[in-house]
Length: 443
Image (cartoon, rainbow, N blue to C red; front, top):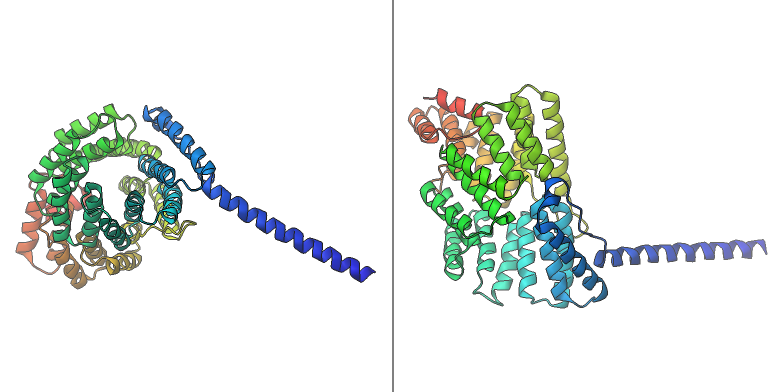
């Protein structure tokens, strides 16, 4: 009797545990399709922007539809689009990209040839630095409809990141012929910039800004890119004007605040620069802002703060690189290479730079990162090899040219070193103060 009671108790426990597992799984699945990814509340000035109430209302309505209508692909994609944009606005890409990809995948299961769903999936793959996958997704969408500017924008970005610049230019031409707007003008601007045509890049970015909507996040982004072009060419007055306009149109915009911080660095007002970057870091989550803060802390002798910021960036990027619940992970080795250089760990910097190089060996920015990491490590032969690949498009970015000058000086190519230093500094650009001083010494 006692033995039978024991068996009965074990059976009851087993059934109870089974029921618990089933309930937990069902809640998780239901949560994924209903409120598992609610819209996160904005903070600070982001919450005061006029688009926020409308964004909240739209998201709430779409979540209700998605919850009640499991076969509604259109609403799932509309909600994914809201989340992608909210990720841009807040910098909370890990959260919103995972949420968006969930709804996109659900929509594509319902409608595998849904053109909009494929485009949104391509956008997320670009955001996570999965450039080969983004190109494959775009090519699938292209078989459904080839005459679409947004589609060509995804293809342009994928080819740029892969270092296939001729193909990027070809698709940018197609994009702008279909729809000359902010998206197409900004891509033309970047392609002109990396080919050394700063006047042409500025011209295209002015057109991008003019095509934008007052106060919109995309317009603010385009205007900050325009300001950065002026900054790189030494026209700090115009740069300041555009950063000021950005902050007037969109108060508290993180990249506008960071731009003002850069101008403060140019004036050697490092306390003011730190203040701007702290505001920017509070406004939007972006490792690049934290990295600049770490540089400023090192520049002003605040090593403890610098170390804390560096460790926070490494933790954030390493976490992002691990696969999330929606199967997403962010390839961040180029970014990690620069952070490890900042920490003084040149071996890890080279390791991560080469990991990124393995993925996209033709990209000039990846080769620049590898060249600089090898230079810092003291391996000048490999630094020169990657530098030559970084210079292949004729890019005149003053940071790249300054690094080229320093690297060539180490192999006694004095004429080349002085030539690059002269070109880098001729307009007195706003670049890293230490790098600028080293380039000046070569002259």
